[in-house]
Length: 170
Length: 142
Image (spheres, each protein chain N blue to C red):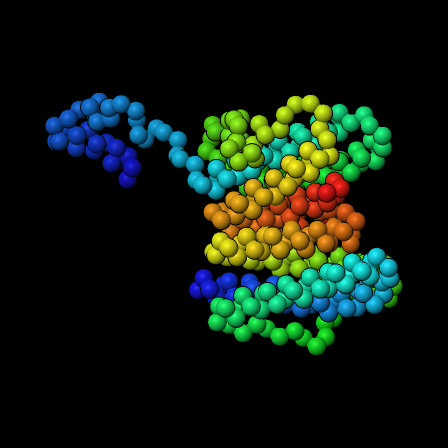
């Protein structure tokens, strides 16, 4: 059926008084990538924020030279492992068209949720607590427009982040 | 239909709060000192949450479900250790119940449910002494 239709196209174009090369001028509207859905954009932003959080924890662990660092590192590694689980779950939900990245290109995020939020250098527990609080608040803000199942995942991650604030001494 | 879903989710949260109130009554009887004070504080919080949920259900034209006279406990509670385990179990269940509100179409209820999840997850982590990656959603890896 498709072959028959394709074979008939030049005939139809000829009947309409135009050549095949006249039909599509400028960018080919059929060759573009599909626009990303809102849930995909949400997931991409949350994935980028989670990656930033993981970077922050790794920096905190590797840069810690203070007293009681062994005990602190144990706590931080446990929380880091949970952020890595968050990231894995988020990435498992993300389906992007071929040729497109799972994460948006790195750029400063207006809501402070992107990787650019975190600066280089020693990372204190206070910074980790602030980042966890910000993450939980940003995730709750995203609930309004997320599909139900994604909203539940984001709310659960936000609850986990909120418990991390307390675990970090907040 | 949307209101029906919201009321059902609110009723589920209310049922969890009623069970939590009963459970903390049992747990508190086996605790002393700061643990007992924490249990009393959490018991009071669950009573307030119950009243809030009942008012939200009534405002939607439905009757809040009444608490049962007795709840089957998930395990025998006979000392401080099992009482603390019960408190963590209760808060995990309450977190799960509020997760239902996050899936309704009403955006304010979603936010309300998410913030209540955070409170319950924090109480659960405090009783358990450790955090979870996905409170209310996936069971902890064993």
